[in-house]
Length: 156
Image (cartoon, rainbow, N blue to C red):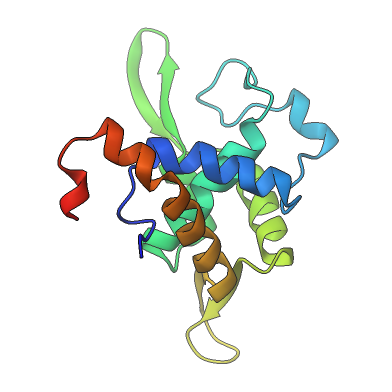
């Protein structure tokens, strides 16, 4: 069976975003229409489904790198900030957006908090069996399209 590691991200993330929207696992809050995705951006996102795409990208990143914390995800979804005549510097993305998406994915049962030991340091969030199953189902559905677009992928 095809896993989400076998399919390129540019095919997996849009299909996963459609699946998350269809299952109503994530829903964009009303404030999300007027918010930037980080201090390195000048304007809010233009795409109507940016919340679902970001949720799909976060779910894939947790699956491939988990356990992952909010700070690591904010750095991954950040960018370089234009400081005028000064050199650009790396800035992290919006932690509030990431925390809101993580809370929605936890309520949907796709990710869970992983602790080091009871009552101690939190390691971050990791996939549950349901989240892993969802990623693999979407990857299996996208696999024929990936085989057509990327020659030589069928041997994996």
